[in-house]
Image (cartoon, rainbow, N blue to C red; front, top):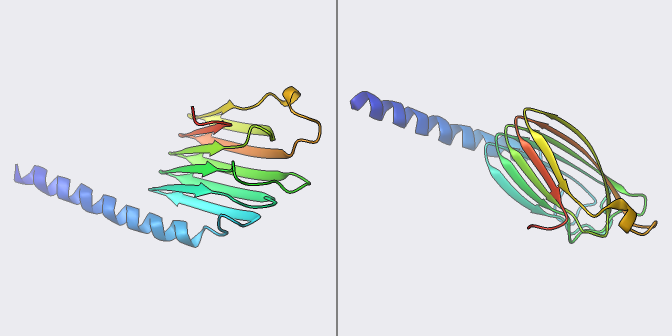
Length: 150
């Protein structure tokens, strides 16, 4: 019984240390805020919610390692030239919410993971609809890109 308690305490300590290191690394590798036209988020061994309110979003990059992120772009506007979003998920998950008025093009790569989309069909959008291009890579994790939460 003592050995089991020691093992459980060791596992708890390792998890706390990993979470603390993950927070430090995430903070050092993230830039931009909710109003920035360009942002970069890193999530390692934890979770984050990020809601963009950018007036003219140009680019974003999200890296997830053993954690998860909810990225809400529904209150953002896109740059007239369009915008790009790079998603790199390994051993975690990402949920991306976009307005149903945007034309969203998804280029995806998945290995032992997946990319799921639930978006407005491009043919239902006006020609002048703003365009977001998403480069999504999921390895051992998952990415969901949706126009709504249900």
